[in-house]
Image 1 (spheres, protein in one colour):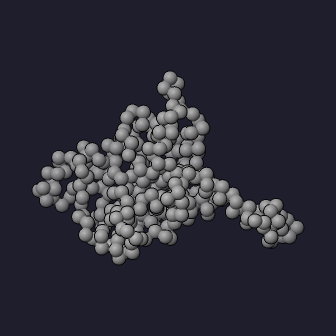
Image 2: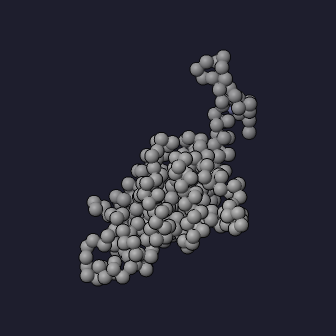
Image 3: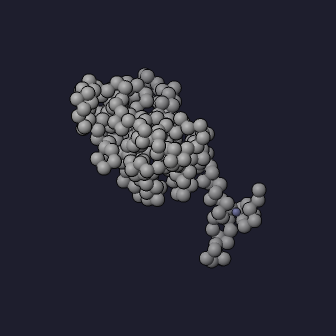
Length: 276
Ligand SMILES: [Zn+2]
């Protein structure tokens, strides 16, 4: 379809001074669409927006959404990325992708989405064990994206290679001051023995780097996928209220279990709950 304003040249008379030309809005739209389709956002998340995300009276969740809003507004002047933590199905990927999309749309930056496991398998596919390097074609866009979303951090079993590769990616971005948004199903437990803690899943070095480079946004909630239709705020609040408040991970350490049995109120959660 042709543009009446610029007749598809991409240039038109400047609004302030007709003797000059400026980029037409249609050209900008075209650039943004190209950037969006290059961001590798999976089809099911392609329309994610913060505006369409149903929230409810859950202080930690509302804080996460507010931090995402601020991130969009302030980008690229942001000190830290975001790390969304919580059980599966509570909308972490929605918030992460909505933030990525909006930053691309508003600021016209190169953004990139990767599921952590698929990133690692892509890198692995080109990895040369003799030279211990991967194709630069795979790594460069990940390291150089102005905003990267790494979904489901900690899902991959931590081997030396996984740890080394993830640290390379994340450290390079950190040193180049390029923000990253992570999601993870693994809680940031202070108990370093807990097998399902973020620390154990990503390793000590990555964990301390994440602390430096990200705002930790941990929240709980009902699984959105348990609802047949799009749930209302009331539906979500009701389901959330019915959940046990301090759910231990399946393979929690013996010490945490013992504490729970003794009914100790403080289980060493660092994420904290409302008002904590
Ligand atoms: Zn035009």
